[in-house]
Length: 138
Image (tube, rainbow, N blue to C red; front, side, top):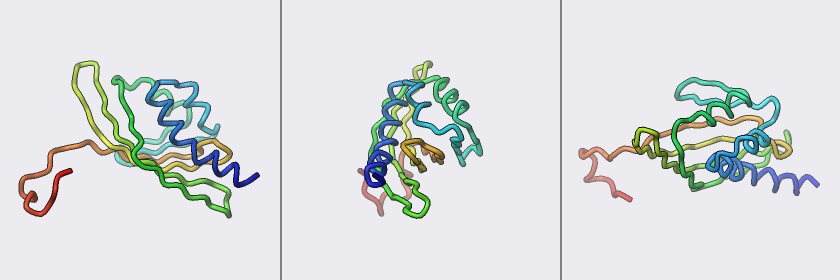
């Protein structure tokens, strides 16, 4: 029984990202526990379940989200699944501006519900000329 639950927990973040990309807000909300908490350390914002859904629902742009990596760990002592995702986001804003960024997200999942989420967002930018002799562009 526990092993099956672990496998189900592991799927939750990818389902979460699909719902975010498709703007299925009730489905997003259904993945969040009643006591869900999200933190965005870069802007020092904290949100509960309803606030998190509202912020995403009211985001002015539309985006395409590609999950690049998922790292899964199960805490046998606390029965929590700790999952890290790396996603690439391309976002079109209403004014025509195009944004591209990456998000690294740390999920804590219990019984197929996200109980906490810490996210770091990084915009893309051109590499500085001064270091081009030591790096390879990809």
